[in-house]
Length: 268
Image (cartoon, rainbow, N blue to C red):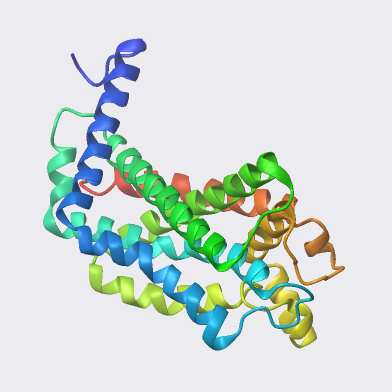
C-alpha cells in the first residue's frame, strides 16, 4: 500500500506509523533511565529549594506552599522545552530522521511520535510533582472537576512549548545549541509569578510578569485549585483562565505550522 493512498487506508497507515514512532521514543526511557529520572527529580529539587531554603511566595497572603506548588507545575511544563530540543537535535545529528524520511512511512509520524512521548512524560512529571506537593502540605480545594481543568491547562501549556522546542531544535540543528536556548528559557521562566506575586515587584516589572504566558497558566491553575494567587486586581490576573487558553493556542498556531514546514524541507 502506498502512503499516498487516500481515505481510511491512509489514516490507518498514519496512525500505525505514529504509534511506531511513539513506541520508539518510549523505548528510550528504558535505555536511558538516568536521564528520565533526572528530568523528573530536577523540578522536585527546585520546589524543595524554593519552599524551604529560598522561601517562595513573596507578597502572598496565605500558605506559601499552596502558592508555590501550582507555579512550579507551570514552570515544569515550560522547562520541558529543553528535553524536546535535545532529543530532536540528537536525532538530526545522528541521521535518524533522514533514515525515517527515506522509509515508506507517513512523514509526519516522526513529529507525532515525538510529541506523544513528550506529553506522556509531562503527565508523569505532573504526577510526581503533585505527589510531592501533597506530601509538603499542598492541597486543592475546589473539587475534582476544577483540579482536572487545571491539569488540562498545564498540559496545554506543555503542548505549546513542545512545538516551540521542535521548531527551535530544527533551526539550531545541534545539541550544543540547546545550552544557548537554556540561557533564554531560565530568565523567561523566572520572569513570572511562579515564585512571587507581581504586586511585590516594581510596577513596570509586575506588569511584564503578569502578561507572561507562564504567569497566566500559574494564576489560572491557582484559582482552579483554590490556592492563593497574590491578590492582584489587574485585567491579566482577572482573566487568567482566558489567557491561559489563548496564549498556548496562539503559540501553537504560530510554531506548529513552522515546525511542520521546516520538517518537510529537511531533506530537500
